Length: 171
Image (cartoon, rainbow, N blue to C red; front, side, top):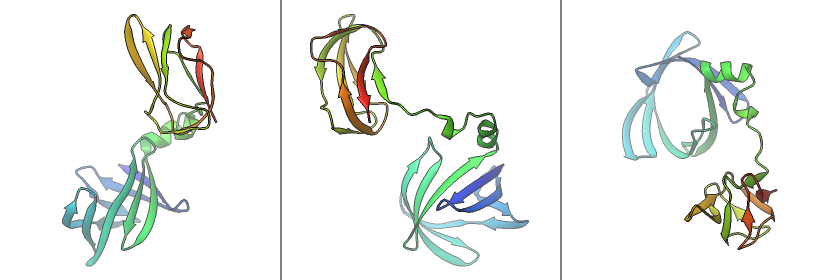
């Protein structure tokens, strides 16, 4: 499987990965292999490549964007990866960059606003609870679809809303 990597936004590497062992591959016609010598925990490794040892710590991983942040011997590297399927999707206009920005949150169903848990100007993280909506005698916690800042709140406690009514706008 061909993997394209971008390191710190500019250095680009392309290699053929071994499907059975992702730590082994072919780069510019040369076989490349990384061996894990020890594992201190889930995110902290000692690895060896061509007789040289490296301390590697996984700082952050974003599986949606296929990005990771590693600390290797004290240096921090941002790495993005794409395989042939990502390249194909991007060529069809359906890659990660094709995702449109979320500007608001709408009511997924008609109901009554039981609680508003946020304020204008508040910073929220993805999956933070924003609004409690009662529909069909059930309370539903509506969560933030993105990390962002609340620009405006279009509803108040006790309001009746229809499906697709804008509840919250994000900056």
